[in-house]
Length: 283
Figure 1 (tube, rainbow, N blue to C red):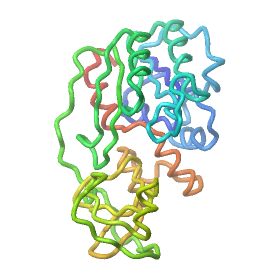
Figure 2 (figure 1 turned 120 degrees about the vertical axis):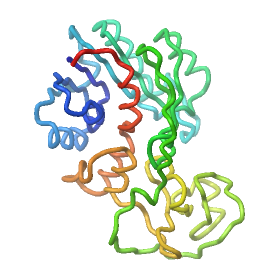
Figure 3 (figure 1 turned 90 degrees about the vertical axis):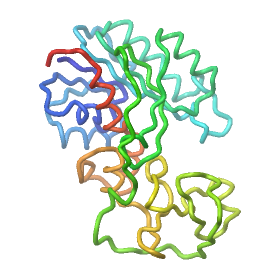
């Protein structure tokens, strides 16, 4: 099986493919992501910038998670598919038409404007399916998937919550500030309060919101978690790896800051495994 992964990141698609024998071609330019990919899969052939890819044939599966920077609701004054980053979607379209793979999957954020979603749908010729990774993991992560793999359905809810993926014996270093208990969950995710200035949280300080481990993590584990009574801490890199369905220490070898960033930009492995299960290819 020959696979081409655009915007490959840390090669979560390769993880999702499991032990299947594949010829795996990857396009990625972020040095830390490439370092992690090479550490875990030395046999991957790295092709560099997606803009330089051409003339590749015989592809069974083309997958890409084109940059969401200008599409995400988190971006102020987002420019959508005309933005400097998200316009790379058109490179996916170009490679798709050039390589003519048997199957393709494109992933992007579910918070994108409807006009951009409709453009992508028109260009790819298939309607997206929205899958929230909370069905198969301890993380809320809503994403659209455009694919010509037939009959893809939503996965069943596995009932995994945050406490199921926590490490044991982690030293707790709670941040300074006052935990303000609230009665409702204005932002969902089993939010139980704030650490510090409530007003700061309401204007974008998501990192200071406190969540219960009886519920789901936010996207990429951003925020603080009440791991045991009043012990409040951030998630560890290993816990964030588990949120994405990655093996423990998959991203080891780079700084903690870059580990969090690489994990946050990755695919949810269990979601991708679910989609691939509908693919009819003889490995």
